[in-house]
Length: 204
Image 1 (spheres, helix red, strand yellow):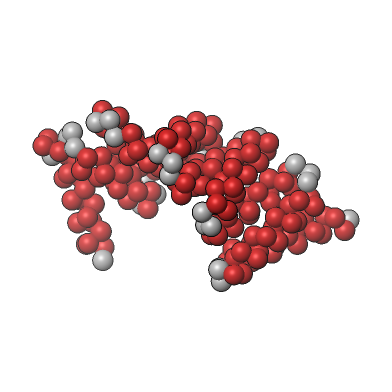
Image 2 (image 1 turned 45 degrees about the vertical axis):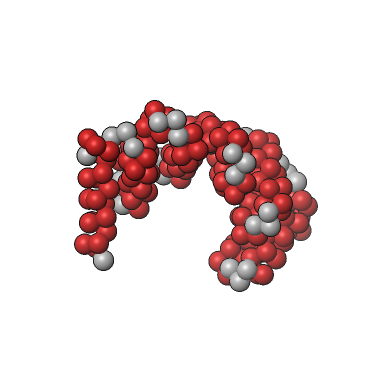
């Protein structure tokens, strides 16, 4: 299994290093995959480099939607790995504009969720609330229950920070109901725990 992974990684490297592939969609896709591979290896600097190279090449080739995917990937790295929340917000907004242009609602839901998380980490709770509510609306429209549940987990936490505990309780219970239906035990437990924490505050 390890040899297979190394072989795949080496294959991707050979694609981007081949002069014949420098200006090709294949190279763009390879940069995206190389970035993902380096995330998995916890080589975050390399992940950012490959993602950035992919963005540059996609822009050069006028591959706007693919560029949006790479920008979204790099913003994700900034949010969860390099912990650069301001840059993550900036790049999620760029990706948002592209996915909105192509009306890719599934991608938009993910960007709204992560944009909400990034703003939450920056303690900009009002902006986080707006982005998460936008994601909620889209997730309801396309009946994406897993996404809706994840949005509710973060929406509940945001409402707590805004001292809207009654609303937070309602949202945490909605999240728990979704994950119970999906038989997602981990996220159900997280949602129930969040509910109990907020509910206990109201008893004090």
